[in-house]
Length: 143
Image 1 (cartoon, rainbow, N blue to C red):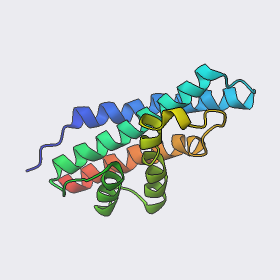
Image 2: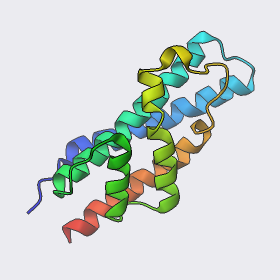
Image 3: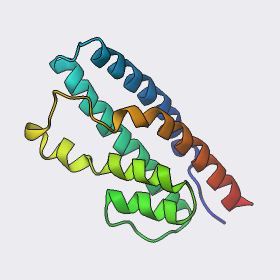
């Protein structure tokens, strides 16, 4: 019998909707030519929260289904994908996202704030697929 913290997983999956809305607002601001420092920093925070949310869900799945321990953020994405929780294209997008963690939290002084990061437009669709895939994965594992 597995212990799955459904409440924490659901809270984080629901939070992805707020992040998707933030991504849409960021894209609209950039399209209008408004991307001053506040919007640049907002982009960084959205990316950081997206990384933490996706990896939190992954860690909860790893803990729940007693999968092997992850050695990195990228490993969390790989382990959960390896168990069949989501598609290969989604895995690639998630890896692209989580690889941004070090630059965002350690190399922030050198971060290019002037441009909208190329992974950002991919996130709303990725979040939607991730949410559905995680829910379907949990359901199939419990059957």
